[in-house]
Length: 196
Image (tube, rainbow, N blue to C red; front, side, top):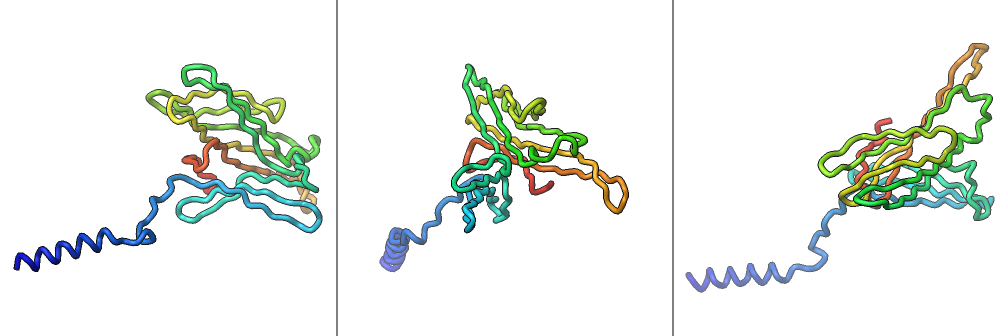
């Protein structure tokens, strides 16, 4: 009986050690993946779209860059550039440049335009929500603290109100866009623009 138990135990140990590499599951990558999808068209135009891919399989487009004969067309694209300068003790100075194809709308057609940048501010023992507004241009300087992993999670919200006429009635048209802002890939950005 002891020999049978010992034989079964050895068989079990050997079968565990002989598992194929393909049987092992890789650990799931945490966070939301950011990938660039590129489409090329016959007329020399190409479109690069940043896609956020969530763990449940959902995906959303974020930034879009249009190239004409290999040259970036900033007037037809909407994207951002993010720069950081480390000051000291976890404090940073940031610069956000926002390119919007809404810039091509004639100013006399726009009643109001608002561009906001919102992000999570990490302090040593807490996190708070911070808002900045773009004023004169699509360029914004901001301050930021990070005592943890040098990550920035936020979004830009752009809202435009325009007067319009439909069926001889005065109407108001609202254009609104959200773009996620991240400096990591994969990201843990908690702002879910799928809800908007």
